Image 1 (cartoon, rainbow, N blue to C red):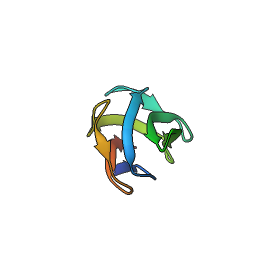
Image 2: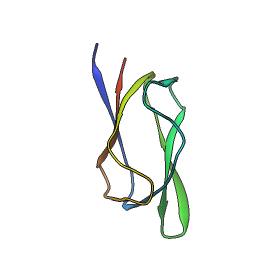
Image 3: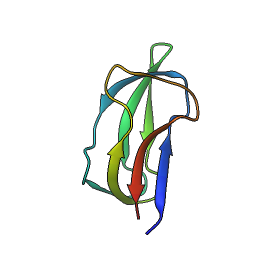
Image 4: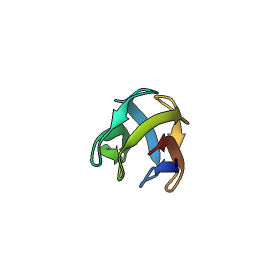
Length: 73
């Protein structure tokens, strides 16, 4: 099993987490929404897998490229 890192594409703050640990995601499913400059940017699972860890919480600031969740395929 490979570990998949889901990363934020923008600098902002976590507005809403829409998945939970243990949830199985398909490619293209949304993990969370990042608020940046009054815009809501989704973090999408590029590959399917099971969410094993959320590395951020709602309201926490994130930077571009930061790992926000881990999945196992």
